Image 1 (cartoon, rainbow, N blue to C red):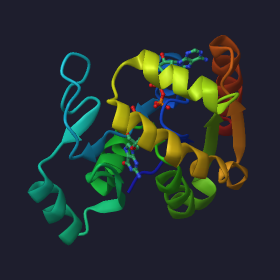
Image 2 (cartoon, rainbow, N blue to C red):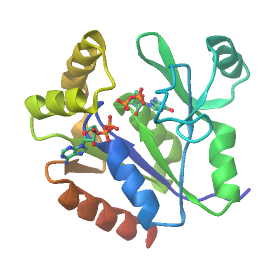
Image 3 (tube, rainbow, N blue to C red):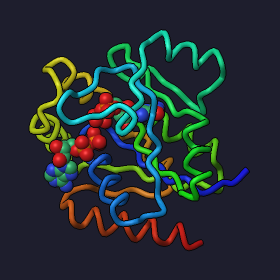
Length: 190
Ligand SMILES: Nc1nc2c(ncn2[C@@H]2O[C@H](COP(=O)(O)OP(=O)(O)O)[C@@H](O)[C@H]2O)c(=O)[nH]1
Ligand SMILES: Nc1ncnc2c1ncn2[C@@H]1O[C@H](COP(=O)(O)OP(=O)(O)O)[C@@H](O)[C@H]1O
């Protein structure tokens, strides 16, 4: 069974991990994005099934839990489930890719434990909570209630930063891109 490495990006929602992961996918052709399963609604104009997420019904998701198809799964927000499918990772490794993840903080730590030495786990931080609030507002994807829930959770998630292999403070995005590229290049050449 072929296997590659695992690069895990975790951060509180709105910190910029998706932006950084997308940049890395453009830079490193041997990286493949781990498409998670999720029960949340698709963001209509910007997201595609099978590209951003495998959008499942709660029933479909529960069936996959019962059949032990997930490496890890979680109820992340608003009763929505998110998880990493075993067959998704195998699909990428079979295609000769190293896998890159965009997951929440708890999921990231679970994946780090699962992949052990094969994993590099990076935590993305914002310079301050005020900046986080601004970015989430500007992204325009959240209701007031969802926004405050994400900010509340972010404070708790920040306390886990030192459990990761590395931290990127995402202030200037170009600097973050460079830092992330260097970390990934060093890890893949090991
Ligand atoms: N544990 C876990 N978390 C995930 C997974 N996929 C996505 N997430 C996280 O779920 C949270 C909510 O994701 P999303 O609704 O896309 O919001 P966004 O990160 O604010 O764009 C984010 O922190 C994601 O990183 C997964 O497979 N497992
Ligand atoms: N360094 C940065 N400076 C300003 N805005 C940023 C920066 N990094 C990301 N953003 C913006 O902040 C918002 C949240 O970023 P996103 O990558 O969606 O975060 P996450 O995946 O962690 O939830 C997006 O609108 C993104 O364009």
